[in-house]
Length: 379
Image 1 (tube, rainbow, N blue to C red):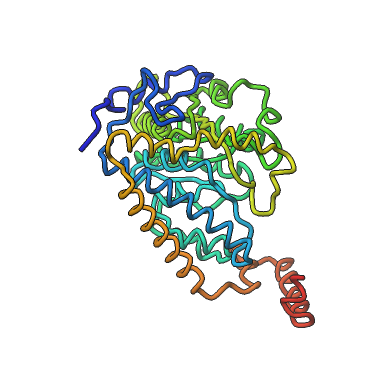
Image 2 (cartoon, helix red, strand yellow):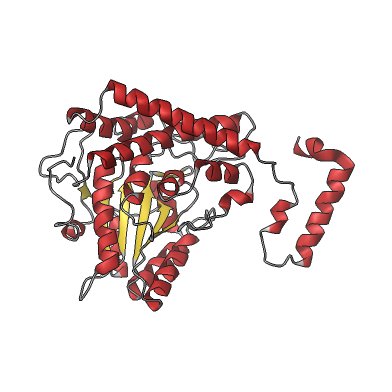
């Protein structure tokens, strides 16, 4: 079954011609379709998959924060509030396309094949969770914006190899203040790379608000300076995100003539929780602001849309919730069954060959551990 509201196929490129100072939206906050909007022509199964994955990401996020608070996991970056942007964008990719993430794209990576267990192991300090064999996902990039030039370079490499792969590069609004952002987009524009630069504008770069990042009216309009398309989308509307990203991916893959392949997407959204579990957002933002954005929550928004069309009811939602809780619980159990890495492992993945200064640091840590033990060092 498909919904007969039209297809993104016929408007896949034209949707990108929206003024980058205007925000694309399909679903209103109450889940109704915005007047004049086109709903993506997806099957009922795909709509439910989108909804389930968003709910899964929210529940996973809540459990992960709880694990960190219990001392069962290291510092963790929550994603609640950003499920619509991550799931909607990742579902627009083909299997052969690539995701180039920052450090918060747990849901996008899940859509593209990474297990919950792998994500948990990485944030538990086990570098083996970042092994991505047979997955078109690049390793987590914690340094801000460092992955953006990589994504442009990957697009250049795809050109040299005559490949039709597309590279989806995720970053936050804070990354747009880094030099790597400007360098990466400049190369992407100059070399016309098959790259979608996806900015998760969640309003806060740790404690720095979006208005302190740029004087530009929108982040999307920065695309003009780099000679590429720019578009702003409601990042808490998964259908609008899917529609816009599908158009950008299609253009990156098949643009000809005067059409340019790279696109800068600004997905306007909000981070409900802390920047990481080491952060206290109550210090720099008001509860009223958080509640205002929670009224735009992408999960009940899509649920209301699907209930109105008879795709979801209480029984179906309960079934999905049970399966989600079971899947997350199993992932946690599996991740915790692995032997935790030793402190030596932190030195093993920095260089291909360990330099002498790193050997000295490792030897120093070994002496401290032998003299004091791990527990005393951690206090």
